[in-house]
Length: 419
Ligand SMILES: Nc1ncnc2c1ncn2[C@@H]1O[C@H](COP(=O)(O)O)[C@@H](O)[C@H]1OP(=O)(O)O
Ligand SMILES: [Mg+2]
Ligand SMILES: [Mg+2]
Ligand SMILES: [Mg+2]
Image (tube, rainbow, N blue to C red; front, side, top):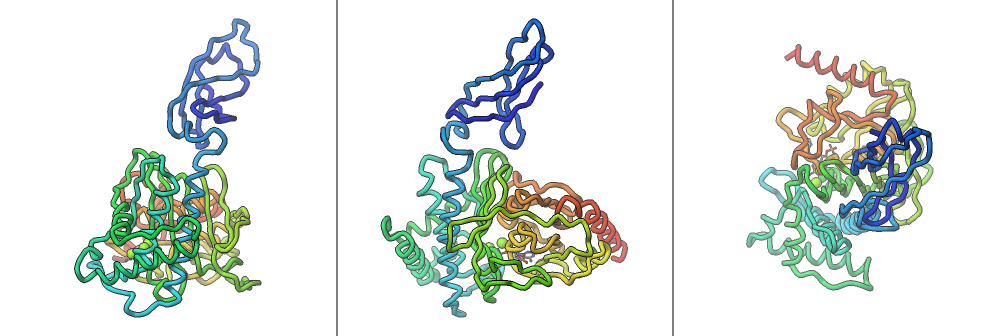
């Protein structure tokens, strides 16, 4: 079977053009941009078996192909995701500025949840549904409206609704219509989907790095799209991340903060200012020398074992001290080469969620990096809300990954034998 990538998308038709010896192969397969077969077809062999160009025209009724005759796959989804994440970032920036102690209250798991978490989720959900009216809408998101539906949550719900409306009114005055508290509850609860391996699911962490947000440090609005269990696009809004490098020994040449990273499968990773529209292509560092590499890890020691990371870094030969920041801003910083490695080893009993890695992982992989669990397996986003990973998550470039995996294995073995 010969594989060829479609050269043009014609609505419900895929056209593949290539060349081959048609007598030795009569079965052709059109693949999508991830090299996954989407159409197979048979064409008749030429009697002489000569090498000549061929075209394969296939009717195909997938909504994925039929969606647009002029744009690339996921273009309009990416535009909607960038708009939603940017609006949510505006809302979060407003709240972080005015953050009062009373904005933080407790959920049953004791993690801090702010009005900005709920407001960001409501806004992203509302904007995605509004911008993509012809698509079935499924969202897997971190927050739910349980506490806001209680008598004790009514005041907070009012504040969230005001915040969402203020943000929409100031950013989209031409098309603004106010949401009611019911609209806000409904938008938040859109996020109850379980995800999985069938169809499309948006994946949202409305504020990733809540601890950083409350501290006034780094956080991200992280939005990804799964299609048949794979991440196909991701957007990371990092309102406090400097536009210039935050790596070790690198002096920032400007004080401007607020980055929007975005990536679409097969299309590279990009960064733009949260306040602007021009973007640049980003790439992970290509160093293969651990002595030149620095590594990112969680700011919070409770989220990831700093001891284990230090031991791995030492075995690998990394000289620089860790760069500790909150949230998936680490993936964004790594995608533009601020550091070469991200190590994440949550403590026993913690289960990773898909919204904590979906957007970040596609930004890094499209920037040329690799994201795996501690055993070197790719992350599997097709199993619902949770990511079942072996021991931890590691991220680096192609050159450093083999030696990083060896260092991780050694450090984990040492840890196991010391218990
Ligand atoms: N005990 C924990 N161990 C690991 N990660 C955690 C833990 N509690 C919360 N998280 C999540 O880890 C991520 C941030 O980790 P870090 O900033 O260290 O990279 C966030 O997604 C945070 O959730 P949240 O989205 O509610 O902030
Ligand atoms: Mg949380
Ligand atoms: Mg999170
Ligand atoms: Mg969160």
